[in-house]
Length: 361
Image (cartoon, rainbow, N blue to C red; front, side, top):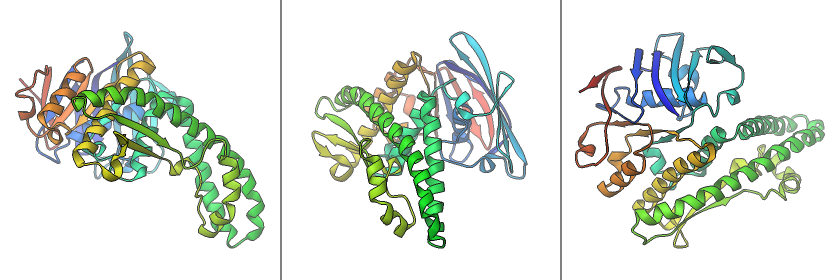
């Protein structure tokens, strides 16, 4: 699968843009705050309907405008497809695939797979659990439409249950209605726990060999899933924790409190690892993610690298670039120095200046 072109109208700092992309390597370079990351975000939005940064639709519309339009042409197994996205200030976005309106984001997911890699990902291990849960959810939603349905349903139930817990403080008679939400919470939650465990198990088989190569065989990386509650005891724990939830007016049990741990030679590097170990482990994780998508969909995802190379030493830069030579890649950077001593083939170079892009030759 490859992206052929991207068109933007009133998106972020782009008044109008049409960008034709190479099927291999595309580099967007320029000073900071010129709009490089906005292009990667637009690609991600077209693929998933969501911003990788969690931005709301109205935040992605050009200042002073009422709406924004995104269009992306992709080629998948020899067939050309068109994705249209219409972002609106005060309404839900409109989405169409090949001219037909899409009512649910799950109908779009899986048409094209993208892996986004940013400096924030390198800090994922030392950041809080929400970053690591987001990593799992972003990939699983692309790979499994049922997971997208379940995590969306789970989040809605959590919001409704938390709202009810607050209301019960003023209307105690509503306490009996908690049973209705608890049944749904358990149904969604157990399936989410199962899917996350399977995902981490699959990922673990790929991260180990990659990390050994990155560290010259000195380190063995293991990723461990840490569910807040086991699948088997979820319903029981919801019931046992009910009084505690009522006191705090929030749901304290469930996969919304899960985490992942990372061990190098049996040492938890979230707590005891050096910054270098944490960043190398995160790089191993993202490279494993690419391999996992390849195996799951029998195709190669599109890789979006947002100013990551400047965060890595030359050895890890070269390892990353050599690992993705057969992958369509869009790379952002402030300059081209990172590629001078690299054996990496560059197909197209674009200079980005204040929302304007021109190809360099």
